[in-house]
Amino acid sequence: MLNIALPKGRLGNKVYKLFESIGYGCPEILEDSRKLIFENRENGVKYFLVKPSDVAIYVEYGAADIGVVGKDVIIEQDPAVYELLDLGFGKCRVAVAAKKDFRDDTDRPLRVATKFVNIARSYYTSKNREIEIIKLSGSIELAPILGLSDVIVDIVETGRTLVENDLAVFEDIVPVSARLIANRSSSKFKAEEINRIAEKIGSVIKND
Ligand code: PRP
Image 1: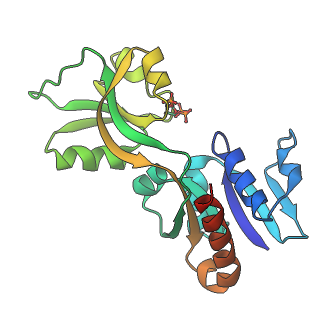
Image 2: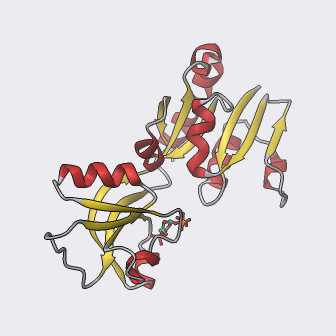
């Protein structure tokens, strides 16, 4: 059995369809249910539906052999896993955004709301800018609107959330896309299977 951690939510369906297209289907997964584990004994796969920011943890600890996760999560968490492939979708970027009229007052620390604490810290360290982090878990865009922070460091995909909340991007930090990752010891003990999957996925995305 190969255990695969799939990110729930906007990436999830696309990732599952990719695995299905290379012969690792498990149609029950598409049914409307609250189940979190799906198994197809015929082709030897078991899928776990995992919160996107937890995928790398399941893979690092070996609960899943492989998984798909955004590069943002990999940079933020720096998990001890192998990054096998850039899947070329789930494209977005981590950026600094703020109210359109924001002007940085360098006389005081910049208040930064984010769930990407490490990315934000290392970005502002590299710019030599003192900051105060306000850690949030979602709806980060609210922070500058409510005066909780000066800026946010967050994912921008289409830019719609920013536009609809009167915010704007001030700086891009890093581009992001979905990555196939593997547990380090599974990469040895299930090498054949994992390599086969990575190769098949590699050829499917090349032909896209
Ligand atoms: C992410 C991100 C932005 C939004 C950006 O949130 O935090 O809010 O997507 O997408 P857009 O540029 O296409 O509008 P997500 O939906 O993952 O939820 P979250 O608020 O829990 O972070």
